[in-house]
Image (cartoon, rainbow, N blue to C red):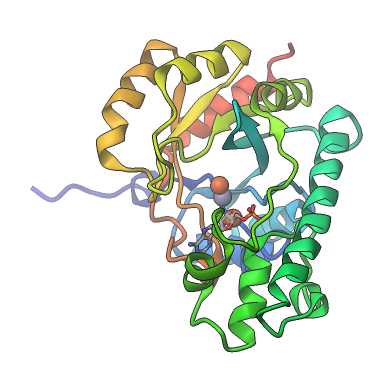
Length: 287
Ligand code: AMP
Ligand code: FE
Ligand code: FE
Ligand code: ZN
């Protein structure tokens, strides 16, 4: 027998991790909203690296095209010297410790990118102006340097540029300021948000986030873990999944869309509406 589709069944969930031109994506926040609507998604979160400057445009466009918008951010953090990306949903915009820390992170990113370009300029004919030139980005990163190298004809795409010249063992590489992950979780909570650990088993990592580390993050107030992400390595997931459920952490799914900057397609991975309802409940509960 044919199953009749109701409106909600035909919807396709929420993509909870996307990037726009305000950080290292290649599409405007408004275009992400329109793409999400065209794909029939329930909604999406904009999670640009270390900035919320895309929220207003995303929210306006989402309202116009009838998709739900969840404000988010992806924060550059580190725990025990390892890079960890922390998603924050529903934080209150404005002043406060979190936004002061984010301003320091963005400013460090700027000087770090300048220094990397200075190093690269010994071997590649690229300039700082080409890296930041026509860009709307509030947060500068290696992808912008990659784009300049691609535009100058050295590499075919971002990925090739990363593999050849921008990876952490490259002579041109420099690290950038990252907030301690436990501190970042505290700051997200203090700003009224829900903290979710991004891509905890990404293939590029030497090892996945351990159950021990997850327990420490949970104790600091982590709300969830992004277990469904295109770059998570399948073999690493069962252990993380059981650790997350033991610790009472929620699980999210998202694509980590970067427009043309990465192969990840919008809506490839999604979270069900119930997950977003629980994020909103958590965010609305005074602490
Ligand atoms: P950064 O935060 O400046 O160190 O740059 C890291 C960002 O570069 C990540 O958020 C990814 O979006 C992007 N990235 C890392 N590796 C690659 C790759 N191989 N191809 C395209 N983008 C990448
Ligand atoms: Fe990125
Ligand atoms: Fe990330
Ligand atoms: Zn991301």
